[in-house]
Length: 188
Image (cartoon, rainbow, N blue to C red; front, side, top):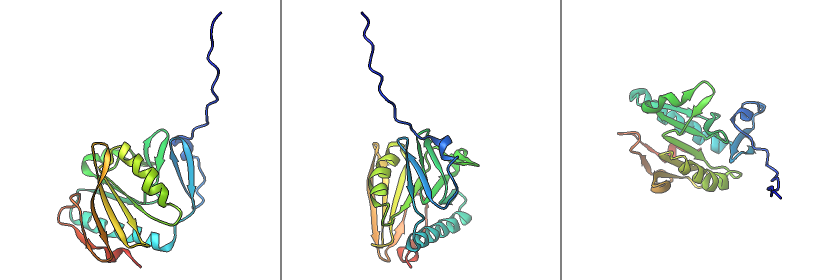
């Protein structure tokens, strides 16, 4: 008598090919562990912070061409079942081969998430672990409601807080030598 294993019903997983078939309807879609997540468009405080930080980094990179900065919506394909849309992505010249027409294919040097009421758990827990798992060297979390910015760096597969700034304090990062800016530039 032969033993057969019971058939386990497999969950339908979304992948990056499915991601590119999703409608362009103003909503943000992400795939984590093959599960599809949708968030509504962000609010004005969120978007102001994204716009201002993108502008600050783009101006620095215009004078110091060490890489490229992209703001959302931009797909970052970490694996077949992990496709995220960070608010801001930085790719150094050394990793420019990750930049393709349809998105960033691999782990960027930096991802930035700007918190909104509906995404705090996703950005602080789910994506925090995911970005560390994929060894993204730098992760910044901006909270426009609390007027804070946290800078993390991956070490031994986990993020370590390297700096936390608030209000109008000055932000500096080893990623951008000589660059500094006041957090007050990010707030409305």
